[in-house]
Amino acid sequence: MVITEKQLSQVNDRIKALLRSGSFYGKKLEEAGITEVKSYEDFLKLPFSEKADLRNAYPLGLMTAPEEEIVRIHSSSGTTGKPVIIPYTQKDVDDWALMFARCYETAGITNRDRIQITPGYGLWTAGIGFQAGAEKLGAMVVPMGPGNTEKQLEMMQALETTVICATSSYALLLAEEIGKRGIRDRIHLKKGVIGSERWSPKMRERISTELGIELYDIYGLTEIYGPGIGISCEHDTGMHYWDDFIYLEIIDPVTGQPVPDGEKGEIVITTLVKEGAPLIRYRTHDLSRIIPGECPCGSRFPRIDTIDGRTDDMMKIKGVNVFPAQIEEIIGTFREVSGEYQIRISHLDGKDTMRIYVESTGEYDFAALAKAIAERTKQRIGFTPIVKVVETGILPRSEKKTKRVIDERFES
Image (cartoon, rainbow, N blue to C red; front, side, top):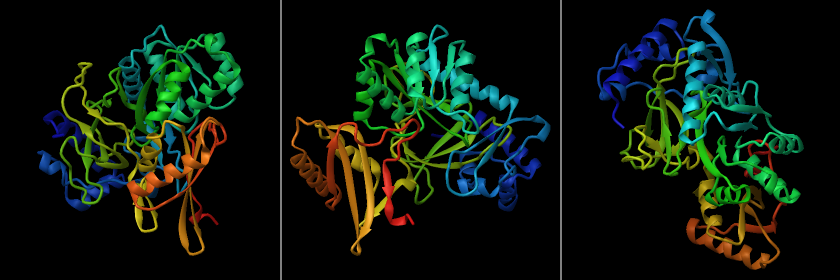
């Protein structure tokens, strides 16, 4: 995706602001002797920024606008190392709400909808982003936050909620609880806006079928505003992203070089108008591709494919590099299992062992199914895991993100 003249001009504005503020990236630019970019080739010479840089800038080393213009901070939800603190100006907050409202509109949501928000509030960007966008749209907001499923379902019925915003894990949990209670005919949901974690096609199908709703993938990360920088449309042919606010590249994660449109790689994002903490060439570690051509919906905004995992998701088992998405894809070929799974990796008797837990119903032979999944994994990936089939509903459900890979080799 070649950068436009307008985007280059916006990048130069951000470069000037970063140099003036002496923020961590401004210092990087000084060291590289870069004060301006005049072409795409110049842009590619700009140094990358990484999450480690952002952590090292703790607490307010990312702040680029004057402090009196900062109206809010958010922090990444990461659990390791120092948190990343992102300052926002009022313009940043307003821009984010505008982008999020655009997401809702792309999903066909209007000011006649009633939007129930289940992601968390606080330092995390999720809940407040969903809410600000819905209010900008003019819709009725039900700001529930996470948990308290009983209350969620009570409000969903009483207020006749039409849109649910959730992680895929919590959307599935709600679908299962609605089924158990036999209240499907009292639920008025039409659409679901789902984000924060990747989800398999099988899981998507279960949520959509059990709730009887259309589902939309939303994209974003705390470092780049938060959720709302992109969303899928009714044609479900990737996620449109707002290239008037961000410039998005796909690079080879090993070489750092851009790859052609349509080829998979790592998403790198530059914020074009962000004031509080602009980021240039930020490596997200999310894996996707730019989808060439026009979308059937007619939107002018470019698209990326569904997030296919992260570069740092890779597991090394018996000398083989494995991504959770590969296991997910294999499980997805078996109609007998649900979309839920868990991977546990341990080191026993001097060797690595992978155990895969999947769910199925009692109408199938668990032993035969486990053997078939293990054999197909061996064919596709090169080693044989231990597969355990359990009854549907046994694996843990989460009101936030579900941890599907547990590496016990590094647990104390």
